[in-house]
Length: 277
Image (cartoon, rainbow, N blue to C red; front, side):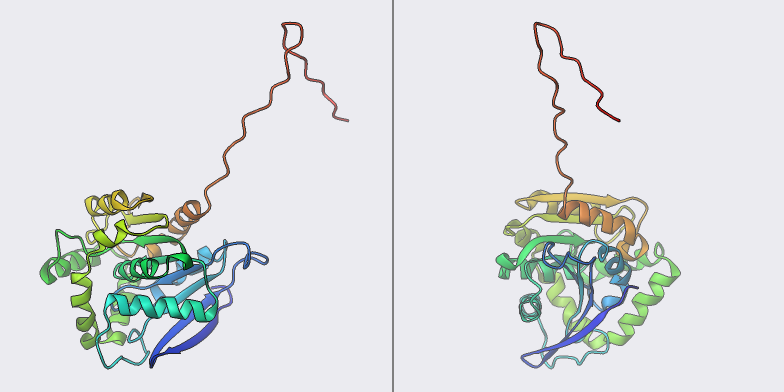
């Protein structure tokens, strides 16, 4: 990993940890930074590879939300809007706006809600492996999909996921499960004013193709990308390809200029003169 700056923010008694990897010299003011937000039960760790890849383009900030990992557990349950407010306030406090919000799994709900709360602070939103499919909003359906996904992930990815689940703890995990199942992501995406990229691995049983296409179609300015052969934790297993798609979405290539042809003279095409030494 490139050098990382660790900062801790306290907002209304909640602890938010932010890990920052600076981008190339001179890009801090010219390019919007990326902000990475984890999903249910997870921490920054499964976003580390993507953070390193995106740091080749601009500054990257990875957020650990209250109650996740080793951070203190809030005494009351936090809903999607509560997390969104904490993200927005943290970024404003650190001066990390306007930015590109990148969420994975439940993190897509957090970044979508944050984009709606502070549209002037968000230039784009990336939804990786978005949940929860409106056709599969039950605990049993989600558990079955996650179980199926573990058979497709690498041993290293599964070890990281289960270790973070243990750090977060079952009690806090369950507290966050209900808000995740209830959040109407498909309707929230429709109200986002910024461009939206929906990204999934082609072998992801959690965020299925039909659902991801629907989200991209519902967005006012939406796009859909699929990373071939990858499962749900696509940003870990294919960080380089995911980063390339995100950068292409945020900073599309300049249009190719039409070639300037020499003017015709006397009804015939002019002649190009070679002036090379």
